Length: 110
Image (tube, rainbow, N blue to C red; front, side):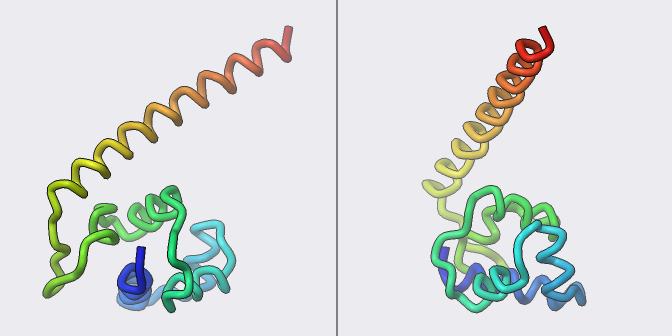
C-alpha cells in the first residue's frame, strides 16, 4: 500500500458524495483512521479492510494495488497470481474458522 491507495479511496468517496464519517461507520473504523488512510499516513492497510472498501465501491481489489494510469490500474501478472492465491487462502481460512466455531458451539451446548 502507498499514498496512491489512500488517494484512490478518497477520490472514490468524494465522487459518491459520501462523508468520511458515513464511510468510516460502514467500514467499522474510526473517521480519524480513514482520514489517515486517505492522506497517506497509513502504510499498510489490513487486507480485510481493503476487501470491505472494494465491496463498498464495487471495485476489484486489484484497483487499490495497481498504479493508476488514466484511470486504469496497471496489471501485473505476478501480483494478480499472488492476490488470487491470497483470496483463495482467505476463503479457505474463513470456512475453517466457521467450522471451528460450529464445533465449539456444539461442544458448549452438550
